[in-house]
Image 1 (cartoon, rainbow, N blue to C red):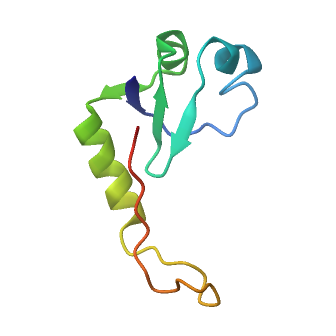
Image 2 (cartoon, rainbow, N blue to C red):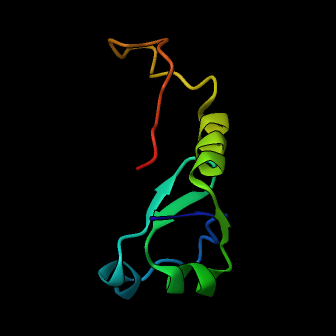
Length: 83
């Protein structure tokens, strides 16, 4: 599994059907992408990170995030663990 840092360009084709058919590309907070598709990472110019570096960026991006105040778990810290 590869961990990559790349801000989404917002342009169609950043992740194509062909990219996902080759190997799923999953996005996470902090501009982190997880995939085995190295071809996609090279095409978009993503910077490879270790799992620990990627997890730290995800953690920093969600730090202080809370559920909607009307949600039953309002006020609880959100935790996202990378695969």
